[in-house]
Image (tube, rainbow, N blue to C red; front, side, top):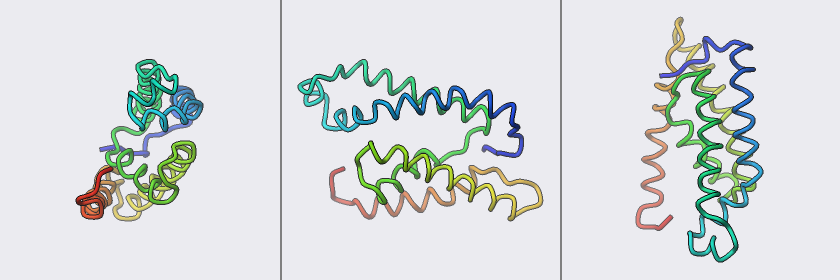
Length: 150
């Protein structure tokens, strides 16, 4: 369920390299995400190699995510809830959304970790608390967007 209790500097430094590489890769081509969101046909007409960009995005996201999971374990709902929170704050432009999502995700994880340490003497798995936030948040999103297209 994920925890930060066993995170050590040596693990963070080792996992930090692929996390930074994957994150930097996404930051460099974040405007491509905006173009890809318009659809394959429009992206091709604007000169993007759709398959190459998708592959690069998948590799970068997988690299960063796998490194984070190696350090902390599986902490569910962070990757699902945080980007939607960012969209509510900043909008859909990935140029701004990616850095804002990084910041909101880090703050959210710190708050959840502090709460888990305060609630019980032994650290509660972070996935439980993120699920308590994530479930109601997605119900809210479903009710809010009912009948509208994305």
